Image (cartoon, rainbow, N blue to C red; front, side, top):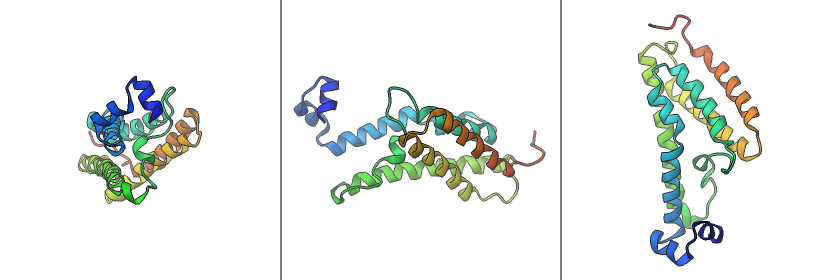
Length: 172
């Protein structure tokens, strides 16, 4: 809090009068982060081809999680994994944000299935969990010191592993 108030040029009293509590401030920060950094949702919305979307999500994760001048990793991925009992409500909010991202991933995969961009029988839920787990793992690795180059390599290998689900003849 002292660092935050100093950087913002305000007093702790001003901060609390605006946000009421540290938990409320953290919720606001999470929401701001989610809206600003939501690269996966943008990729899923903007790319018609699921494979372009997958590649983009994985490569942008490597970029986003290693930006200079910003803490490494992902605030949602590593936020509130362990918490004191009094922060249960806040932890549940973060968990719901992660669950929403997982649902969005599964929804995009199902859209790709309907377009014939995945082999028949692909388990959309399991694939969504795999892709999301890879992105979350990249965030943790970045937090633990993995470089952008290392995460790009992870993204490349992950994408190559996913390609067994690509139909041999891509629909037009």
